[in-house]
Length: 408
Image 1 (cartoon, rainbow, N blue to C red):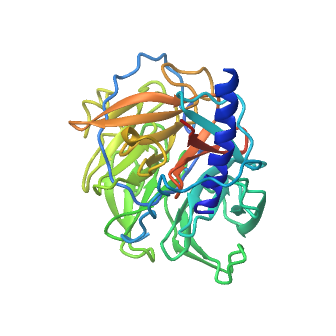
Image 2 (cartoon, rainbow, N blue to C red; image 1 turned 90 degrees about the vertical axis):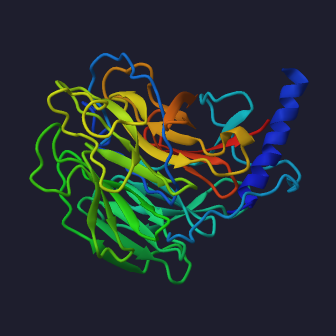
């Protein structure tokens, strides 16, 4: 899929542009809980003013160093003749100059999307399986899928190594799946990490660090309590084969997804506590040995207990997927920004953010300036930058996969 979908999309976007010119759960577990997997990216800090939101529970609960994304197509790449391409997504609101297209649909409770080293796409469903998607005609629509692996419980995250090995996060364990003959069906599955504690939350997103190690989120077993197992409410580090597991950072109630930026910094979303403590969802800059304060006692304030968050992602918004924009298809001002999905509250829509796609601009401090970039999704749960520099957004609520393209 590398360039073909993007090229087709540009063709489609060109036609669209011409027409326009001519005429004018309580918190946790929404599904139960989304999960996502990530490839390496560094961290950044963000500042957002804590939102004066009314108490509502939160819903969600989704490569070695060389596994960097290939460069985006240059501006010299010319789109093919118009006439084919994915349909424009209805009801999705984005900033001027951006358009969303539906590139795959029909998923049942999808939780995570990942891009393989050859541009192939993988989508997990909460209760299985993990699909591999195919764009057989090169028109940007993924009309065919195969079952890469099935039989895993409560899937929440996917990560793909540089050699094509797919890492899958499911309740209490991490498994590796290989497709050795290239037919889109896994023929070798191994459980490399087992016995992780789970309860109200579980292990979710994954990412490979610049050191070649695997980083894994593991949520708390409860809303607000002292954990019996030191692996709960943490971010874990392990070797690529699952050995050498250790706690990298702690005090994170339900870290859902994580990503390394180009500077090697590690960022993670985290879902805050429900009533009575009622704390915000956070964007955190993760450092080795860091303690982020959960459970928050006695202040119930993430800015006073442990390491303070870089940005406030709202109260009970169920922050889930996250990625760093390192592509070249969007305008240059977007490079280095973070994009994050908010699944949305199970009950009332909290302010200032409902189900949405956020743009987080990293400023000195580090601080994060948070903006709503996209609305109209049902329950967006994961986002990832594709190899062509466009942005993929997976929607749990509609079972659709969208591609956000800058159409100028």
